[in-house]
Image 1 (cartoon, rainbow, N blue to C red):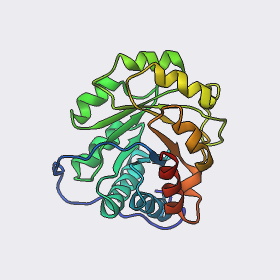
Image 2 (spheres, rainbow, N blue to C red):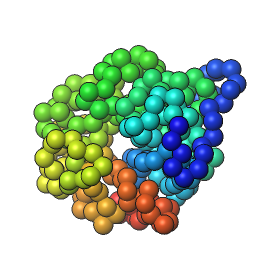
Image 3 (cartoon, rainbow, N blue to C red):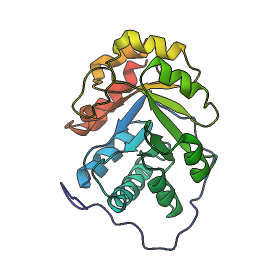
Length: 236
């Protein structure tokens, strides 16, 4: 596994077991962290963001192997749960890794799927009815198609807000006007992603989105908690 800034905790060697489940608080999408990196700093920033009130932490490591992603996911889930049990931990793309982490007893709540990942119905069958499943969109056609999956998915990611070096989706930037159109087309919560900064939050919140997803603005911050609190304040 790549350890860019220190080792993360290894996957527990204990026997596979079902995680204990309690009644979860309402899903809070206002400040949604998407991680980068695979080392100790990734785990620490995730915990700091959760402690400051981030409602979701998505573990994303596009170049990691399945084993590396599982190790990272378990480490992030442990640190986030210790910092703030109400924060949900999701895995980017890999429903199989989310399933494996949950089977190991990690506090992992589901998966965020892209358009080319495992179909929503298959992910739901794998992860069960209590899992959270998000789906990437970003065009009116994709949002309308996702609306037919109500009951299978819990929220939509929509972007990019502006061009970003983190991910090239091939879709045109939405800007604030684009989000108003997408929000009006679905009953599902919409999370804005793609080059979002804390300064953008009040304008995006006014479009009706339920939250904003940030990568670099939190991961690269000297004080991640300060950024998270600013994002939450932007939603009023």
